[in-house]
Image (tube, rainbow, N blue to C red; front, side):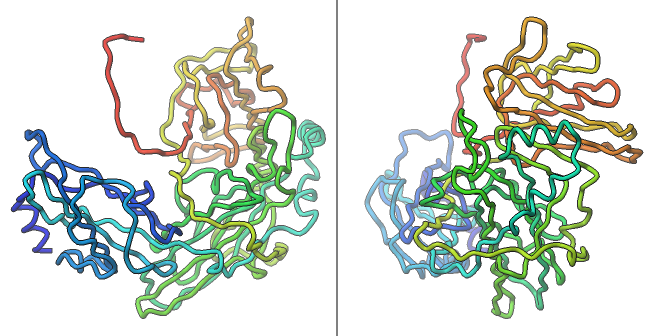
Length: 480
């Protein structure tokens, strides 16, 4: 707006408030705390000036950006508060309704008691999340026997692995179709799982977080995540969700324990749609959903993943997919004694990828790649366009034996192995594969079954961690 331009071109104070956060998060889509804590960082309007400080602040919170452009906080106006505080200031305005968005900005007075009304670029927001009584969906999962049936007709080697590790079960595929009837103003998903999940709408991945909803004491608390999917919706739509075992029922710890919190994986899902005409709609997890299994025979945190390409379900996240042969889900009601809270942490993401530094053949057909550093995550592998049917296997390790083979004794019972059973291929593209619901700690990767000699560029180490913001760094003359 013209007001923003005027503010930017006529600074009157030495400092402004930037990097606004709510409960340590930038523009969070779900905050279920009634009085969330607000914070900001001070930035000099002239980098050459020193000895600057904040003398006072004013927080303005409004239902729309336009109000803030004119310094109106119709949800909260803290007025001028004489204080140098910039963190943990509780929201003190009108309580927000579930799903409501609050826009906010901060005006700060400098050491000379001069203020510069903050620009539009420094207007942030947060959305009120769902409280336990706001949820209308049900937990949904698969009928008894669905996953066990899918384990039939595997190769002998895979059958033996699963028989000796009975916690390894197939990933569930859940889906539903829905339609929209007018122009969409906003659309937001709230989701959590007894297990871990990946979501898709109309063949497109929802978000970039990994291993959601994360680990908590599921007997007491589930964290849910929120996603803005406004740009993904069409008139005819399909939702698809992959549902793995995760910390809920994967192998966890040293003692081959699994099903720590329960044997069955379930999804809780709500899509809240607001139309331009102010109508609203909710698409939720209920008995209208369908469930099946597919190419992921298991994807376990410690053991790794097993993928059968010939069981790939083509187009299952498309609205045109025929799911009439899929089973109906089973449902269970939400236990109101178990907390459902908005995720308050930075999501787990792939934060960078690494290329191995060296490789060698430890014995015929067995290639060992060295990333020259320890990492946590998994490997993305690319294959040539043409190859015969093969079984590509990756094993992960932190050290080597004297003979150059990988050392895995320290892994105890964890297999840390990702396996891809592939059909004969004559593609116009290079197939790229990576696991879904596992992660490994490793420096070395042992690769077998690759068609021909793999190159360093065929292997990528995907580094995975909580995506906390990078705050500072230091340099040293010591090469370390």
